[in-house]
Image (cartoon, rainbow, N blue to C red; front, top):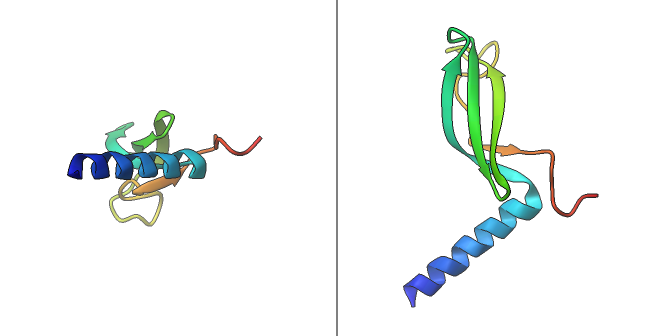
Length: 78
């Protein structure tokens, strides 16, 4: 019974990501001599990359990738 419940929960999470347009962070890496931060987000449609300006303090740019990010393509918008 628990495997069915797990499948249902995963299907609901997938539907939420599909219709809301949000993704969750799955990876990050620094580039351009540490001045850039490349974040990868898992969405319902695949993996999306985002580039940010990086600083350790977070005053200019971001210090780490945001956990959630809304992407531009949403299924229910025309």
